Amino acid sequence: MKLRTPLIWLFCLSALLVVPFYLKTYGVHLLTTWLIFIIATMGLNLTTGYAGQKSLGQAAFFGIGAYTVAIFLKLGISFWIGLPTGALLCFLAGVLLGFPALRVQTIYLAFATLGFNTAVWLVMRNEEWLTGGTFGMNNIARPSLFGFSLDNNRNFYFLALSATVIMALLLKGLIHSPWGKSFTALRDNPIRAESLGINTRSYTLMSFAIGAAYAGIAGGLYASLVQFIDPSLFTVGASIMMYLMVVVGGPGYFLGPVLGSAVGIVLPEWLRFAQAWYLLIFGVAVILLMIWLPDGLLSIPERIRARKAARLASLARSTQANQNIALMERETLSKAAQLNEASQVKS
Amino acid sequence: MSDFLQLLLSGLATGSIYALAALGFTLLWQASGTINFAQGEFVMLPAFLMIIFMQMDISFFASFIITCAASVVLLGWLFKRGLVDPLFKHGMMPIVVATIGLSIAMRNGVRAGYSAQPLSFPSLFTNNVYHFAGISVSSSDIGTFLMAMVLVLLTQTFITKTVTGRAMQAVAQNTESASVLGINVPRMIFYTFAINAILAAAAALLVTPTYLAKFDMGESLGNKAFFAAIIGGFNNSNGALIGGLLVGVCENLAAAYISPAYKDAVALIIFMIVILFKPQGLLGRKEERKV
Image 1 (cartoon, helix red, strand yellow):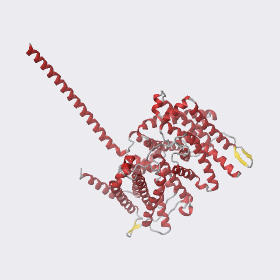
Image 2: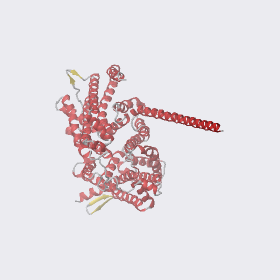
Image 3: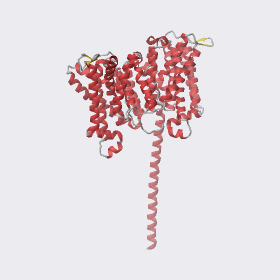
């Protein structure tokens, strides 16, 4: 078991390294988009799945990251400065938004983030001097790394892949640190977590801001991938889609975003024949998923395990009961025999 | 000053439609803890149903009645049995996610199955403009406002004055005690869903002439209704009225005096201020709960 897990990881990683050499340009592009959305939804998974804060504004942070890179490039500032700046801006925006919004929970937070998304979208659409308005910003140049040009789609794919792996490892480290444990403690039982001395407010704020920074990184990469951005990419609808990706994959499962982004990004391409009907099918699928698997697709193995355990337990119970009955029967029989003997002796 | 009054009046007309959608939203929340993210689509669907019925040469009034009946079946009964009942045991968030799914499905179902183009919709009111003390008001604004107010007040009266309405309130306040007192709880909850469906159909009748029938017309209407409901106070049905009117009026004033481009951010700003100072909403009761 201990040897198997790293072997599986190694296999997946090498598959991801080899696959782009067998794909056409569009396939590589699609895979890169998938990786970028994994980063964005990983951040959202931290906020929503691990810390339990429902955020419907991830696309706004995604957009802030994308526009920061685009605007910096227009000013002649390198991508490598724009990307971390975008993440930092998202982190700060996350703190500023989270401060009032996290006073309230669940559905209120969802609406606050949703409204924030609308506000950011309005700025992108209206401030033409900064963002180009509805025309968007085009000719976003791809960066180069150590003299390597990333103009080539395959090279850019490897940049996205390494970014995804680095962000995933960082997240893994965070979740397994005492910090990460506090996040989950907060989600599972906020009152108890608080009584154990966890500062609820600052932890939720941190989880929210870090999740936002992840979206900022993803947005910066996305701007560089598509080389043209406009406000329509960062609407409330896009945020809701990201939230659904997390929920479909399984909130609070480390690999949930990987599966969820595949459902949200790659699957629509396969289901191209369905065209306009695809989103109808998707919506209905979300409803059915909530009814049968409210914890997402990745809860299936756990479900099966739980069911098996339940069946084994009930089996054990029934055999135990049968044994008890047999035991009781034997006891009564032997008692009857003793009484019989006793009566025979008397007579 | 006359500009201001004019803006105020047309803002009230828009706001009263928000209030109508927000009222249904609050009722559902009170009776069954359902947050309906598809509330905007619940207004969009009746608009399209009415268009379909009118194309079958059914008169305007008759098709509205049929639409109301169809809404009660589809958006009331089917919604409750198919989505809310099976998810009720899982708590609030799965219902929210499922209604998000429902809104995506409804929006794209109409787009793929009927039309992606905006369709015109006959107005209830003749389009006269009245001039009065330097203010000009269109009759459709007045008509919309009055009709929405009548509907809101009728709903309020029904809830507070009739036996059925009071039973519905009892269910909303304390389900267990209500069932001990012999109130048929599932039926009362169904009534709430039915009222929500009828209010949505009425809102469609009022909003569609100006906004046109389009598959995504529900998106912004739904959002405004949520914000209005929260601003006014979720656990108070007068809150929906106040919140809706406030959002409508402020939006209109902001569009005229500040910037029309940022009109849609007004609801958010009021919402943020309200939850900073009074998280339970302007008229809401405080629910004692830590974190």
